[in-house]
Image 1 (cartoon, rainbow, N blue to C red):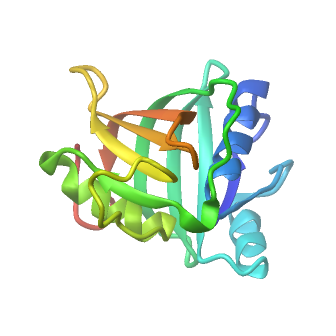
Image 2 (image 1 turned 90 degrees about the vertical axis):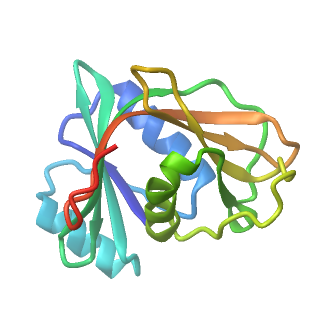
Length: 171
């Protein structure tokens, strides 16, 4: 997956994109003056089937739009993020996904498909995991990354709202 930003991103948004690139099988590129069409073409030329564009509000990452190679939006996530200083390393090739809440299983299935990571078969596994947990009332869900030592390594993605453009799914 290619990860990029909206135009003229803040340092915080660029840092978030770089931290996502650190934990996912992806490539981060500066958008510059590229249109969305140009971004999708670059993604395709780089061999990726999906593209994530991170938008911001008041200098903070606020939305992640996932596109397929045709330019159709697969899912949009309204988010807030936390990018702690991380010390651990996620083994990208070994990253697996686990959902802790049945109510979020539809979102989990969609993320597994988009991020191209397998579901974790072992509920006790804590290493190299992307964990989807229930958030508080304002934050509907939280995505946390755990490194090869089982430590929370960041970034944390707090999902406020999500919309699936094809099925009308909303969290």
